[in-house]
Length: 283
Image 1 (cartoon, rainbow, N blue to C red):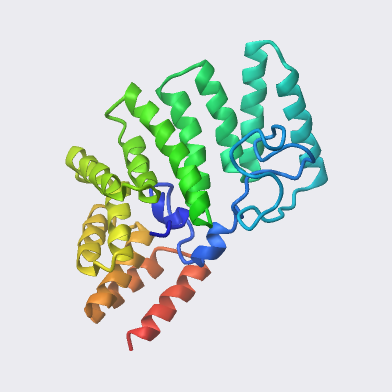
Image 2 (cartoon, one colour):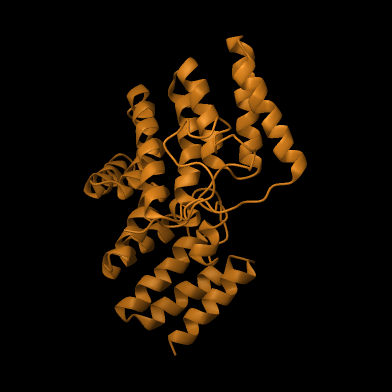
């Protein structure tokens, strides 16, 4: 099962651009979180010190970064490595996480936030780290990358839930992370558990709808998206995929209405183009 792009797995972040091509969206991360800093690997550590191979590969193509940013991060990594005081080291780790987030190297940001969580364990610290790995997971472009990052997400979200079993955001993301594992059924189970606890949970409804699309269960997908649009009529992503699902079931008029609803609540020209394309197919 391929991994859906970020705009699908994180609908609660407002109304992000929906109609971007999935591959183009995923390629923003390029499957690699690290700047080119010589002997440093993607986490800013000596090459070979982590599980992934160092250097560019099919999964980790060349990426560019302004020289000034590259030097700034490299300097911070050196400071982090040399710092003996735990408090100061945490401060540098936090700064590195922000720098990596700014250049969309989400798993590197997650790595440094995880180092903070290991020193100061708790629900929030582990969730901050897990959420950054989840960002990287959402953009992963290869199966190997999805599995690697999905495993890290599962590890950290499990620690979040150990601190607070009622953290539905963590449970939802954990469910999606299981979709890249050998046990995707557990992911579906977790998402359903979220809906038992909160039947109006938009993130869980959205993800279950899109997983139904992936498995060609368009009737079920339409039910999920219809329910979600009743809860939040301004969820442009849900309106769009309601149209997609209805079109696949043959409900052309209802699909048109959903597509037009999506177009009416978004000013994104890419979405408008996608809606127009879908409407053309319905003629």
